[in-house]
Length: 247
Image 1 (cartoon, rainbow, N blue to C red):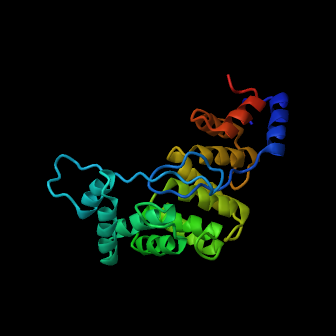
Image 2: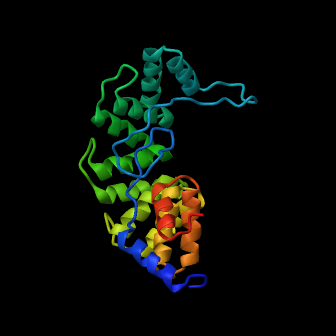
Image 3: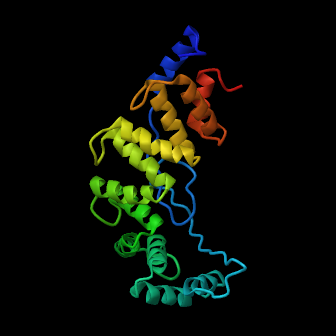
């Protein structure tokens, strides 16, 4: 490849020996996750919704959020329960979060969390779809089902959810829940990488480096790793140091 001498290619060989794709992204409760490591570190609940100045009518969900944020949590939960029963996807998702966390006066109950996440996900709620994928993949609150996880993530990924795109890429790379297909992994990681997801940039760089699922291109691999490293992604920083390209 252009721009790489024998010594540098030797360093790439070391990276190939130790490099590996990064594991799937954690479950979301409305806020971005910070690292693709495991399902164990769930973000804290942050229930908030900004009202644009031009909007005159305040939705029932916004009223419930205001109640919740001002300490009237039992009233807020009652409102969400009433609206969830009537089919409101946002209220269903919120109940899923509260049961998952054991918050708002509700005891932690993963069966109820799954019930409400599923209701919202079936109506197209993108984060609920993503969360259903995580719960199916980990067997938390329901039987583990990698095929179902793949389909929930696909729904969210097609709506542009970067972390779902990342996880879908991982399953295609590993052949988990789907037939192994490096080109599909590259496709989904490429989508997530374009949205700036550091872990996807790193994994896509590995695919370019190995020529797996896409033509080998070491220059593109380095470009992606630099993008990832610039966001503080540890694995990308380490790889660039191994290659002595971290100046």
